[in-house]
Image 1 (cartoon, helix red, strand yellow):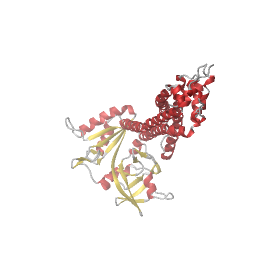
Image 2 (cartoon, helix red, strand yellow; image 1 turned 60 degrees about the vertical axis):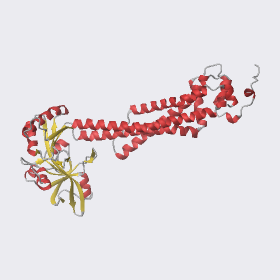
Image 3 (cartoon, rainbow, N blue to C red; image 1 turned 30 degrees about the vertical axis):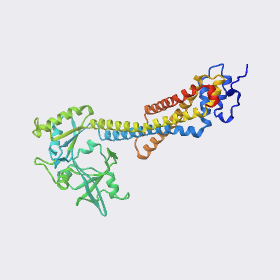
Image 4 (cartoon, one colour; image 1 turned 90 degrees about the vertical axis):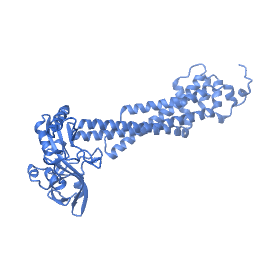
Length: 444
């Protein structure tokens, strides 16, 4: 074979320019097609020889993928935790609230008007076939409770005998109210677990102790089991008082037709009967309150299943929005990969020219640079998936909600990292493949 006379090929190639030693090997591959495995091994060798640069390039992908998976998992865990707690209160529940009182044209919230009475709840229990239990309630917040030198503010709930049945409540100490407590409006109280911990030391037995609720003396007869936080409200930061006593001593407002209540909870035999129960309740209350069209109802009926569905929809939308925001970092990571690959093409111009001069095709050059970009993205994606799962597990353990990692978020994260690698490496790889070998060896 005659030696080429081109000065670029006669001149010795400086060793400092041969950053990728894999590009010196094509002489034995010029007569056969290079396999994907060989291209992959070349890419790994090149990336390993520049570990710091490769690691920094992966960082954007790692942060993006881990953020998406962690946020998605945490959102689903919180959603599952709240859903389980609501379902623990019963999915076969209707909540009927009194109308909203208005002060200066401003609504004070559902249940603030005196449009429902205990007698309404008792009538519903008798006249609605779909109802298995009805529990009336009267609630007030910011109630001062004092025991000795301890002074706290909590919520008070006036209730009847059916509340534990409907709300699936159980005492861990003592007992709940009896019928005679309601009949004579007896000053007794059942404490939520948080109130118990706030007022008493662990070694003290609260049963039989006296506390003051808004200056009135009450005897503690029981402590409820812990329910935790539901919908942002602490279900344990509450005290339970007989409805009749709550109405007479704490609230002090009755309607003209009976004992005013904020609302009542209706339990049906199963969730499938809730629509029938809602229809029946609406009709009975309209008849009792003499409401005829176009007059508006002075009460509101809420289906517990609707509450769960609404909350799930809101949480899903919120998680999706936050996940999309976190996904922006993936775009930043892709830009970082593209920049590094463009710089790599410029640094390795003579290597590319040498390889083309000894027989490497443009396709082989394109495939190797594209493979390097894909390897960076896939390794970064794998690390990001592991880091995201670890963050989600840590958050679930610390804040005590279910650990949930959906398969689709992991698969989607890996697919996105692969797409980022292909897109970010496409232009640099194309530029490398189009280099003229003579000009590349000459360094132009």
